[in-house]
Length: 507
Picture 1 (spheres, helix red, strand yellow):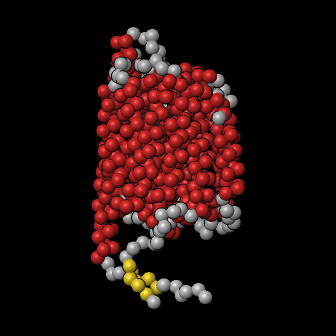
Picture 2 (cartoon, one colour):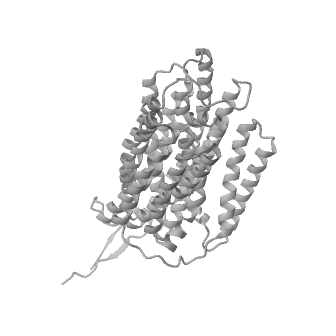
Picture 3 (tube, helix red, strand yellow):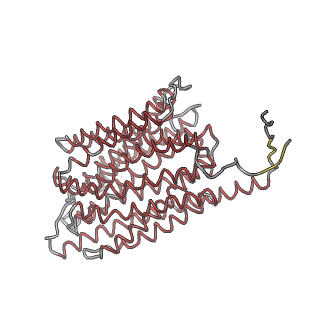
């Protein structure tokens, strides 16, 4: 017996137990990684004082972490197959906990940046390996719901992180923002050992692409380093600024040309010939730049021109994470129903509107207004990031998912590192103008005269125009994504019906 249908696979609306167990483990690893990022952002002002450095340097504590993540993410597919996804996840979580402890024992700014890079390298495998396992057990037709399910606890970290970080910094010292990761890392390891099914490692089926690793691991960091040098030197004419940027761009272009000829490249650039995947990926890139870059500004503003403590700053920032936790699951369900393009555009609209108040910051802007704007900004982030990821997966076939996982995460982290460097450059330049240029300190206090604090607040307001610009740029690939999804639906509607052969009844 046969019947014709154009519907997707049957779906009861409930997630299978294996999906729930896998998601629980992924949540634990992601929570640890994201919690660390949000805690560190609150402590940047204190770290700038502790190590006697300015904005243009202190941003490397964030940037080194994300660059190391971006460097190892392309390896996630290869190591997951070669050594087994479960083993890789457990080893990464354990190394992350150890690296966190080393950060707490850092004796200099340089050693802290180095240990943060180790943190990023270990944490960089947690999310893509976890997402790879999730995508394989859930299937494309449920990715919107699964991503929203995973997103809620993940996005709780930005709520808990600033408050916990502020409490730790004010009560016990900056070292504890890193020591706190140890118990979370142990929990992630235990959950992975108990809940993940045992997988057998084996031959990956393709050799490790050493040339690709070299090109990517040097190219992107070189561009970011050059951008940071622009902020330090105040000019693009300096050889230490333009030479790394040009060299990094050349290496990145060389990788794209090289990867197109490889049967199994480190990052499968051929996936970007799929309009839906390419549009969703570059939406994630622009959102990563706006999100991670913008996350360094408000903690410095609150502890700088406003003179708040780390704990007070954490309480002010918490609504952004709350808004994201509310917006993500709603967006996930709507994505499964209407597609990622239209939902991502609604999320981007909310994000842009909620960013506008920050372009008018002053030293006396009401804190309730900042908290309300942060809440809606969080809703915009949750309402655009998750639909973009889900739409990217839905545009692909099953065998393409491992490569897509690496590509998506690399673009998001690279976007975040470049966005952080650019905004740190802009902010350092704005603050440097107040002191005659260069080396503007990140820290200040409320006893500075109000006119000076107003000028400093204006620097943060001007920098937020760049955040708004990065958010607006994300509309361009989102529009392309919307059109690609509409074209795909039109092709399915015009195509021949699918003949589904029903299996024989069991006796």
